Image 1: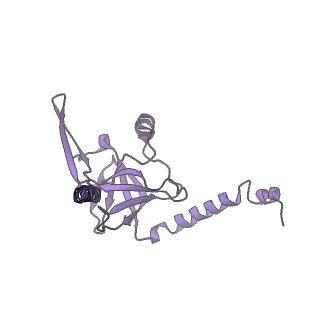
Image 2: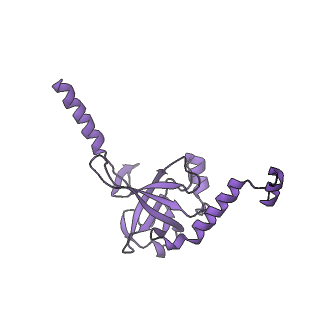
Image 3: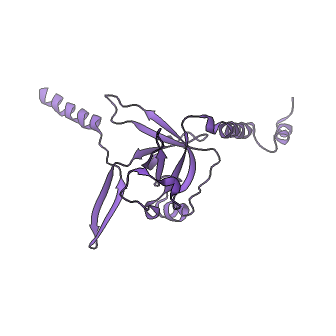
Length: 193
């Protein structure tokens, strides 16, 4: 049996865990397009958006300001009586680095964000129609092998006036009915008791 020093020499100065991670990444990369959830999404921010008020039927593959990225689009949870809405996640292809050239300057330095949080992403549905989504958070901070990010579908165009100029952007309006319902039940229970 080789000593730990000999074993590291065999593996090229890498630990067994590092080698296994690389092998897992290779398997994921080699089988990426065999998964029905694999798609090409298009990343961009507010300033690189040519259609600010459009939420669906985007022509992302023909837009040169949007950056293509390989993703898996995963439904994380279904809608039930105790859950408010369906949640969706995206997973980036292993070893895929930030390919949005302005992200570091605008998002990392200014907002201390982690790629790709804060960007819009156009994701095609089963019919190939691109819909606008917003990447809002990392889905699980404990998963480092194949991290996923929570995305919310943009469902509203927000408008406001700033310095006598009409501003607008796509966004997400969410409500938590179960929280409101639980709060209502709590108030009702306190009145009964």
